[in-house]
Amino acid sequence: MDTKPVKPKLHGIIDYIFSGIQVVAPIILGLNNKAAKTYGALGTGFLAVNALTDTPAGLKHLLSFKGHQKTDLGFLSGLSLLSFMNYIRRDKKALAFHLGFLMAAIAHYILTDYNANRLRKV
Image (spheres, rainbow, N blue to C red):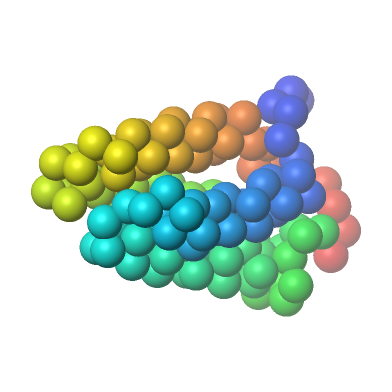
């Protein structure tokens, strides 16, 4: 039995918050234009994936929670690679935001019980 604390509903709620952070925070923090646009695109894409995932927080249940897990892995991989982009790496403010967000996203992934939805009847 998985004892991870983040169940599908909470995961979805946190994903909505993360999407909002990606879209709004770079602008509020005054990150460079490329970083702000990149995070805006990532946040918008992540919002769409979350809204289409079969969780209590999802709006249209087209993607299984296990499928969502795979998109989360892809997202984390992309975020990790983004660390090497000059417009992130060479801008101290952008790098600080990026690394903080990346660490939060990794923790969110590790703490999520991606098997919880298997017990839920659809």
